[in-house]
Length: 256
Image 1 (cartoon, rainbow, N blue to C red):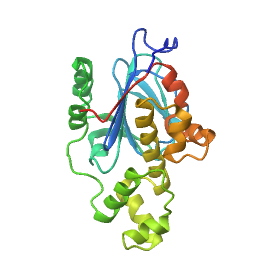
Image 2: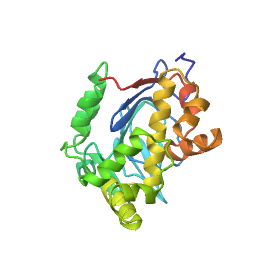
Image 3: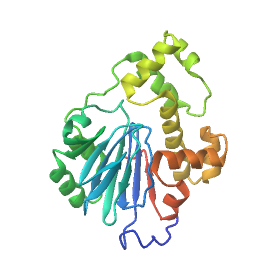
Image 4: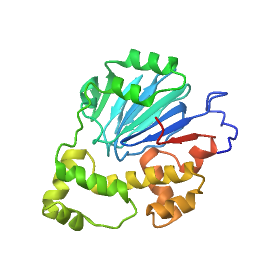
């Protein structure tokens, strides 16, 4: 995609990169003025060059790293320097929440490998997302261990635009609707609706990387309208997709 000038709030000369892989996505680049938002999957945030402030409810803390659980409304305020945001699907790994040393509400603060993480990201050129994940979590065991929920996750990933509701998905794996929804949330840490939105966002990113415009990509991924996509993106990430991409962000999808 063509690059355009970064806003004055970003680091001069820095262009952000987003990696999209099976099970996770990572952003590394200039700090962004994010609004309060609530992610659909867990997120690890790291201030590469400077601390940032994380706000939740009426409290806040200035740190270098944080683990933010899915569906936790918060705001990350980073005035300068580069930020890493790593979004982790529960089918990928577990235990990240146990790698922090203090808490702010539901948010974990100060990863115990914080210094090593920062050093790794400063030295790596280019960044190896897989190596980064190994540093973030102490285990490669997936959080989703129930085969029925793993099957549902595969279904949603394969065709996020499909309109299969909770009842149909529950029937596919032999569960009642109420038991299915409870088990899905317990296993993934997020809701069925929010995970479907996440899967659609990943499909949009892949389409944009191939050269499709946002409107077409969002429609093909199952969003009802451009405003539905825009509102969902802002709710999930704290800014609009147009703002993010206008900053010259590079998308790298499905490469090692």
